[in-house]
Image (cartoon, rainbow, N blue to C red; front, side, top):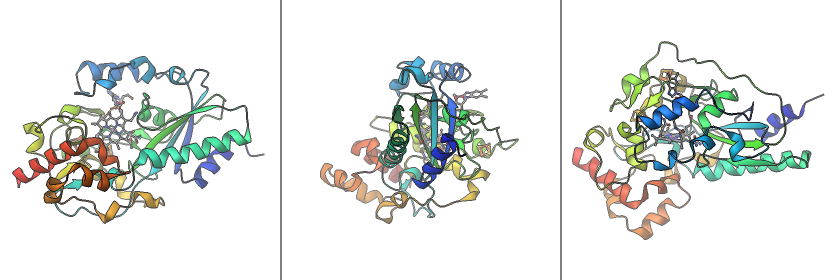
Length: 306
Ligand code: B12
Ligand code: SF4
Ligand code: SF4
């Protein structure tokens, strides 16, 4: 007979969740020292929210008391397409906001699980909850954490969004996946700002993604502005060079297709945006994260370099 674990996996596939794995909801004891060290070295930059409640971030029990299982989910977001000049948007932000899309899929899965077994309760997390999604995905067998610090799956490379459902029931647990980076250092060598300071460790202060999305400042730091390589929002360089991303398996989720067909933004158009046109253009887009002022700052910086 098919187990409940197998049926959940099958249902997840039907709902457009590309890969799913289960792990015991116990503390991330091996990851905790790495996370503490990362914070101590100041590698989170001005993302002070990462300092809050570090115990919670490494213990699913503190997020959801009575938790037995972490269901880790990966949704492929790769769509074929290339950038069209400076003003490059990182691939993850081409389509609709993944927080909404992934949450919708996980809600549908949780509803189905509860309908199958009304004793089940669960909590859904996508990105913003204080959990270490990459460490959980690794533990649930979805993939391994690559030297660029993103999770890589054998099926879709690292072009995946992560999300979780924490459940109060036990399931059949998956085994963590071994590291398949081997002797490769392509991501470390390609990073223009040397942000991957050691294998598996990214210093956000040096990262183009952090600076163009998270950093609230009037100007970009000089080591970033002189190395933007055309990026206006996020950066995909370390993932573009990864041999595991040569798989280029297109997603079936049409909402991840580039909005308005745009993979790059026209810098003059960005500079001419006003709050109303900005809100209209980026409604339901993850790009709202950088705010209008941040996007204009990035466009200004790109123009100065050209
Ligand atoms: C903060 C954050 C950022 C920060 C910091 C990035 C980072 N490396 O952590 C910034 C703003 C820079 C960022 C950028 C990006 N992000 Co981000 N981000 C997050 C967030 C909110 C938290 C990550 C976190 O906890 N970091 C803390 C550090 C300590 O964790 P870590 O780097 O994974 O370190 C682990 C290992 O590397 C290892 N380790 C650390 N030190 C050592 C030392 C040794 C010796 C060893 C062996 C191991 C080891 O152990 C650590 C703990 O497991 C997550 C969502 C979430 N809630 O988890 C999304 C998330 C990681 N981001 C995501 C994405 C898509 C991106 C970008 C690709 C976006 C873009 N294109 O611009 C870039 C990638 C940049 C990069 N190379 O990392 C996805 C990644 C999906 C995936 N395939 O893994 C996530 C999971 C969001 C999601 N729900 O899908 N992000
Ligand atoms: S996202 Fe860009 S800047 Fe950040 S580590 Fe990767 S290559 Fe370097
Ligand atoms: S580029 Fe090479 S070292 Fe970096 S994550 Fe990919 S396989 Fe690992």
